[in-house]
Image 1 (cartoon, rainbow, N blue to C red):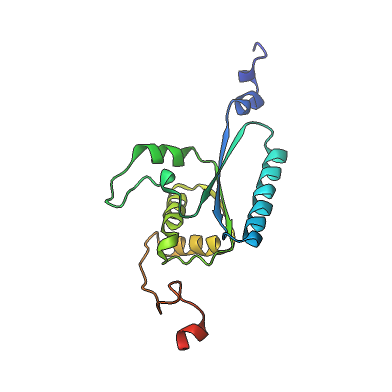
Image 2 (image 1 turned 180 degrees about the vertical axis):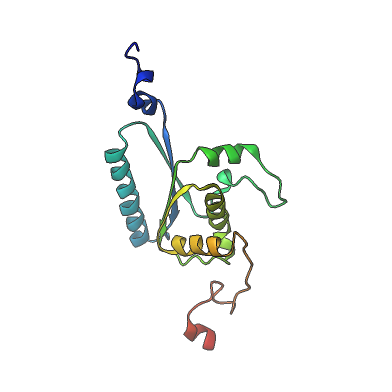
Length: 164
């Protein structure tokens, strides 16, 4: 060998940019935004220490994942989102919102988690996203729309809300 980058596994990794998707399921309040910054800072420092090569970290809200969902409402497969999803190396999800698997607001995140399960993507799902991932696994990717229990609490509310 001529001592070029191809002779070394490190040389191969130097040319590869790791793609990391961070999904923000935090609320809009100051406390929520601060918690997101702590989560995001932890991801940045972990990858800075463990992966000294190029990385691209993209942040999306839980309801803005359409650019990675390759199947639209009519069931047609879209190539560009499929390619974007395929290039992802890690997906990191955390938040303080009470996202339920049956709620419309979590439908994009649920679909993405199903895709991750089906393809074996590496996912770190914390808080309510962990419950969504568990439901996606247990329900084999199926998702049912469950109507609100009472109009004031479309996410279900508390036991006291339902009884009252």
